[in-house]
Length: 281
Ligand SMILES: [Zn+2]
Image 1 (cartoon, rainbow, N blue to C red):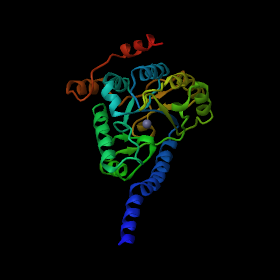
Image 2: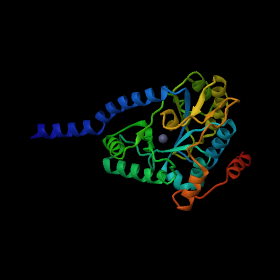
Image 3: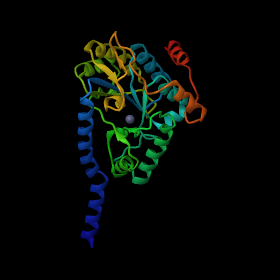
Image 4: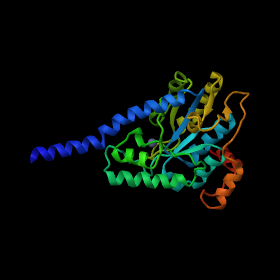
């Protein structure tokens, strides 16, 4: 009897963490192979939005003519709906990152599922595409529930291959150096524009981004959203001097329509979001 109980417990544990972990390695390889086929660099920002750092990042991206993907935390979207709306209105892409960043390996199935569903619902209000939602699991880790959530609700898992660990850095130079050495076609860079622990700041990320955008422009590569890099949409921008938008799947008419039907947060003016940074210190 004890042996059967032990076997059941072991099988349950294997199904909850190690099997999803093994599958994740395969999915990660497939994802990175897909983005490597496009001649572009993806800038991704997790754990936001945040009033100060996301606004500053949006301004830098706007200046460089670059587009990025923001994996927003539901609780921060709730806090800063106008910033989430500004991300979309400025033509960037948004994806899910759960509601409160619950660790998949230390949370039970019910807590995990609640966190994912709640976070997904918040971000869904700001999505302007009918494609499967992009989803970056907290800490990039999966458990059985995360896997189920992804497969059943047809989410597109998004990983990264460059992590400057900006959340541990006070020095923008260290972040720039780490990224600069790795800029290449198919690079997916993990940055953070917010914190699930609000005690630390994203200042180093903002300062580093300015230099990194210059490095990308000098390398002659385009920046792309993850959706573009996966081949869903044409790449709209090149961060070189010649770079201009070629096409945009997010039309003002569609944004206005979503505002009217109330499925997107309060409208925010581009000038307003950009001028907000000018008053920051
Ligand atoms: Zn995160």
